[in-house]
Length: 159
Image 1: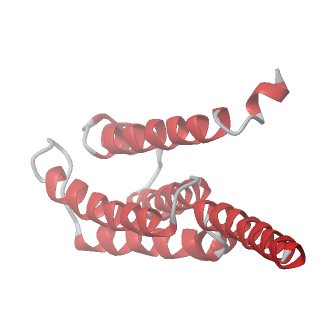
Image 2: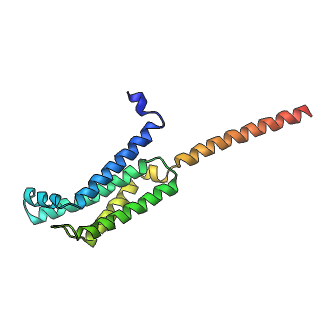
Image 3: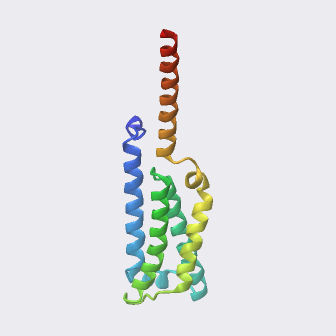
């Protein structure tokens, strides 16, 4: 079974599925009143609740950004997803003003972006390393150049 997960086609699909599920779960948590009610019931004081919930904001976007870095795609598309995460942070805060017992906050938008920045730093290798498509094209291109040189030298020997 572990061999099937290592095939080139299964792993990217699993990563995309994980990314989409995580994004959907986080979006639902941000746009429903129940998490706010649960936090009020479970966490002892307003100060403790504030720090825990703000830490969750940072960590959630950090994890989402790291997951985005793991996705196998050309770098320009990955950066577009990063812009999407930024818009998601702002959009969910805007939409929270229409959810009972929730309110949008510019501070939360800032914390979301802090999480995005930390996620890029943490997954630096995946964000700034060679793009999967570019490295595949580069190796294919160098093989083609090598084949062309061989055929050119073979032709010159025939003359």
